[in-house]
Amino acid sequence: MKILNLSGTPYEIGFSHGEQAKSEVASSITAYEELFYNNADITWSQAKEMGKKHLHAIEKTNIKLLEEMEGLAKGASVDFEDILVLNARSEIVLTQNKTDGCTSFAIMPPKSEFAFLGQTWDWTSAQSKSLIMTKITQQNGPKIHMVTEAGIIGKIGMNEHGLGVCLNALRSNLKSNELPIHLGLREVLNSENIEEARNKVVNGKLGSSANFLMAQSKGSVHTAKNLELSPNKFGEKETSDSYLYHTNHFCSKTVIDDIGNDNLTTEENSYNRIDRIEKLIENSTKDNHVVTEEDIKGWLADHENKPNSICIHKVPGTSDYTDIITVFSVIMDLSNKSLYLQEGQPCQPIDIQRFSF
Image (cartoon, rainbow, N blue to C red; front, side):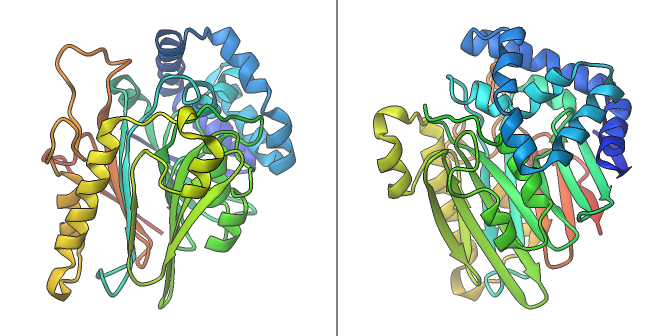
C-alpha cells in the first residue's frame, strides 16, 4: 500500500494524491466500472450523470472538497467526473444491490487501557490493489491520517485532535442528492471535536445510508458516538466509559420505522458478526479485565461462524469484482494519537504499520 504525504492547498493536496497514485486511481475506476455494470447494470457514463446530481450539495457543504477532487483528477490524468463518481460510489451502488461488510467498535477507559476505535473493512478483492494510506497536512484544517481507496478523498481514519471515524455500509432504497457519505467522512475528519463532526452529518445531510462510529480522546475525556444515518432520520448511541459496536444492518427503531422494512436489505452475516463482536467484547471485559491492543487484534482475526466471520476470506471460485473479503483492518489508539494498519486478513502474519501524529 502506497503511503502518500499530501500538503498545501486543497487543489495541491488533490493533485499530489492523483499524481502519486495514478495507477491506483486507474485501478479504482476499472474496478468500479466493472462492479457497477455487473451488479446494477449501470454503465460508467450513466454513473457520471448520477454523480453530477451531488455537485450542489458538495459545493454547499465545502467548496474545498470540489477543489481537492479537481486537483486529483488533473494529477491522475482523468476526468473530474471520474473522481466524482468514485466519491459518490456508495450512492450509486449501495442503493442498488450491493453492500460491503465491516465490523466496527469503540471501547473506552476504564474498560480499556486507552480509548480505542477499530474495524475490519470488507469489500471486493479487486479493490485491494487500489488502497492507499494518506497523511494529509491542510492549511486551514486538522492533520489527517486516513486509509482510503485511491481517488476517494474521505474514508476511515483519525486526525490530530484524537478524533477518529469508522464506516459500516447500510443499505436501503432511500436516497437523496445530498452529500455523498465518503465526503461526509472527510467532513468528520475535518472537525476539531466530536460534536462538530456529528452535526455535519445528521438530519438528512447525507445522500445515502451509512453507519458512522466515531470517537475522540481529549486528555481524560473520552467520548464515542454511533450514528445510524439515512437521508431522513438518524439513530444515535453514546458512551464515555464503556463500548459500542456495529456491523451492516439498522438497529435504530426510529430509522427502521421511517424507511420501512420492505426497503431494507441485510445479509445474514451482519447479524452473525454483530452477535460475535458483542460476545468477544463482553468476554474480554469480564472480571474487570482491561482491554489492550492485543485483545483487539484477536477480535479482528476471529473466525467464528466462518464464512460469516469477522475476519472474512475469499470463497473459492468467486470473482475478484463480486466477492467480499476483509481487505484491511485498523486499530486507532485515540489516547496516543496512533493508527495501526494491517493489510489483508487480520489473522495473517503480516506486519502492522503504525502512523502517529
